[in-house]
Length: 141
Image 1 (cartoon, rainbow, N blue to C red):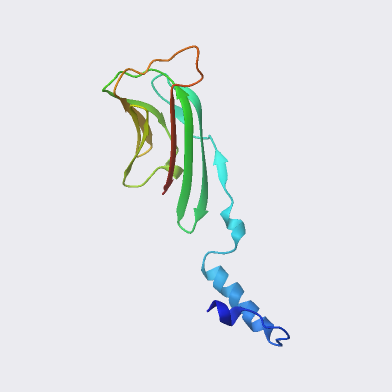
Image 2 (tube, rainbow, N blue to C red):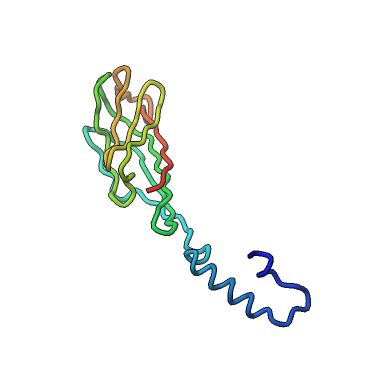
């Protein structure tokens, strides 16, 4: 199909091909300007004394979103126990699945709209660092 839409030098009926191309692009969800990333930290709520920097970005593609969620946070958690860290807004929560990310001996996971951690040892907040847990998730919801 792509070859039939390409222009040939000196072609007289280029309007028909151009209009078919426009119609095809519209049927596929529109032009590239719809692929702008939205970035924010709105809707992030820290839990259990955790704090830090968490932000997300997403691009809407049809009825799906491609999400990039990043955080560098600080707090305390007991080893071998699951601790809720924060919640994310519903518009970027993964649907019907659990996502996991490993940072050293800690497993950070997203379940519904809650991010939590389970670590092999205690996680202790220190005054000499700006964070003691980082994560980065990229997923489709």
